[in-house]
Image (cartoon, rainbow, N blue to C red; front, top):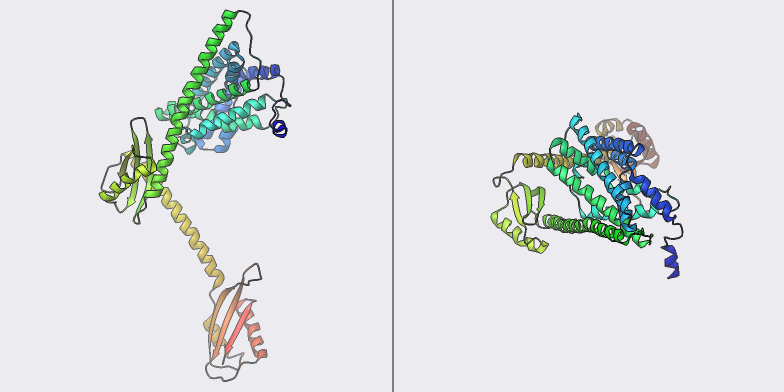
Length: 445
């Protein structure tokens, strides 16, 4: 027990509380250097999202100073510092507003158009984003509370929690007037910010940081009420969001299992499927390619849905001759089908090339006809039939394979076997004639 306590001890290398609070307070302020770095980081992230470069986006996350006011908010709640709370909230809103405006302006004037996969990835939060933000926040405040803050933890937390990309994606949504991008990205950003703050608050309380004391008891009660209100405003929505995200994640996973487990048809393939999850509307839309499935097959699929915990979900089948796709859905589905076809064709081309190489290794074009005509000039056997082929030779003791040339020579009138000296002479001739070193000669009188 003492061994485990020593291993998990957070007190041994903990920095002084005053030092930790001072460092967090410095990172809260957005003016001068911090503000310019934020602007530059916003441009870097926006460009990375625009050109679909993961490396550039990671660089922007490393540069971005957005973690400061978020951790300041959680720390202020943990130590009852109302002034730090107000400053953190004020600077957080100012930083978010600045990054949002900068990214919006960039995407308004960017010559590169089109929705990239890195943008799409920042519009649909999942339960994993909640967990990443929570554990990332815990790792961040632990690193901030250490004497040595030169480790890779803080940059790692900045990359993991990904605050800047969703904020820039929201700017893209505003610039292009795509509200699903705007609200989806802001939703993801809010989740990250809330759970980082919550993690900071919980760990500060766990490490027993001294709470701020007030001389005026009335003011202390007032501040506590404000703090309690701030905690409720922060925690309650996060719990609701987390619950909804968990439910949606379960639904999407059940839908995936249903598609993979039930849609097994010999002449029909699933091209694409989409899930829709709201309080009053749970729906799975499946796009099929190939021979249309019958109404009885669709009924069977619907009857299987309760087995996947989808009893309250509507199934919509889209296939040739039934149901009509809208233009955007059709284009997206055709694009996906085209991509799938290209992938399948590329895999088959690679397989064909691999088989061709193996065939070429086993059997090259051999001048059998010419060798047969020339054979009588060097051998006592004048009328013969010759068969030649390159073959792969395996051994149960050798780790690698070898390639040999097998030559079968059958006499049409000789009754005696060919001498070993003459066989060796023919082997040496075949080595030069076929440019092959490893030859097996078989003679039949």
